[in-house]
Image 1: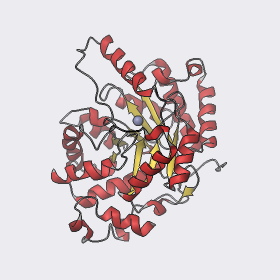
Image 2 (image 1 turned 180 degrees about the vertical axis):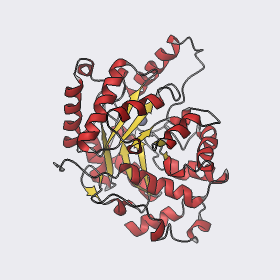
Image 3 (image 1 turned 45 degrees about the horizontal axis):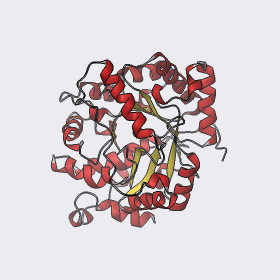
Image 4 (image 1 turned 120 degrees about the horizontal axis):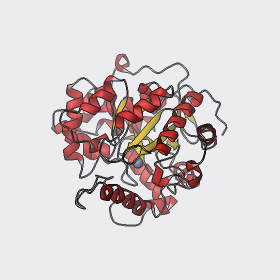
Amino acid sequence: MATTTRRVALQWVGGAAAAAMLPLRTSAQAPAFPKGAVIRTLFKDYAPEELAGGATLFHEHLSLGPDFTDRFRAAAAAVLAAQGAPPTQRPAGPPPAPAGPDPMRDVDLMAEELKSAQRDGVACIVDAGLEGAGTDLEFIRAAAMKSGVPVVKGAGFYTEPFYPKEVATMSEGDLVRALVRQADAYPAGVFGEIGSWDEITAVERKVFRAVGKAHVDTNLPIFTHTGIPGKSALEQLDILEDAGVDPKRVCIGHLGNLNDPNVYVHKTICRRGGFVGFDRQGGNGDANVVPLVIALLDAGFADHVLISGDASRGYARPVTSFLPKLKAAGADEAVLKRIMIDNSRRFLAFVPKRARRS
Ligand SMILES: [Zn+2]
């Protein structure tokens, strides 16, 4: 299976021409992982090298509650209304789902979505759905099992509009314990998506601090959600760092929405060692995001870029649709492969502090 995945991966960007290219990398270019590092999927801990045959998508959704989209829109609209923004000014969301039956309501369809992504060069997928967002862990486990595709589960709490109601009154210590419990039980391979919606709220700060401390207890990496474009991005990193997290273990997410040609916040995160998430790619929003990615590559920050789709189906689109746009804009194919295959594995690989329970 690894051989097949590898051959498919070679055809990502340039079709037949790419297939004739050199192998993906020589061993000299292979990323170094810490001794004992694993990528923790739902059913097995992988050595990072075992997932080198394709892209790892670090932020996708295999299960969200049926009311998730409505709640998401309502929360976004409420923030904009509070700011007096015109109703046309909507934050960019994930690429729209195509018509047809919803794979999130049918395990067989979801397993087929995963297998289809694998055929298109995807080696591993991270589910970013959390308690309070209607995410069904058993559904994800069933789809992952049926497809055979390695799925990493995120743990944590999403954003204040979606927190289970007890989060408001839980102490920081209670939250840390709850997060570690989730991580052990799923088992989780990452904390995320951990978010703020607008200006980060007091409760969201508490959750961020608790996630930082749960990282210290578990060593799991962390990826975030920013709501209003880029808002609180640096503050998210500050809070996590203050709680003891090395920024290089963090990806600040949804920064494709922050349309700053100078990529100031993006570069600041890179300079501090963190990853920048362009994680709603493979759709209509790509045109605005291509120059941001190119600007980071030109500034020498290719090792800090992560790309994913935030999608609920059609998971391979960041690979099949977004990468060709980056290539057309001048990005080097070898660099793109490094981003999709190596950066996401470097982000996810961690040396466990707690033994796997299941
Ligand atoms: Zn998401």
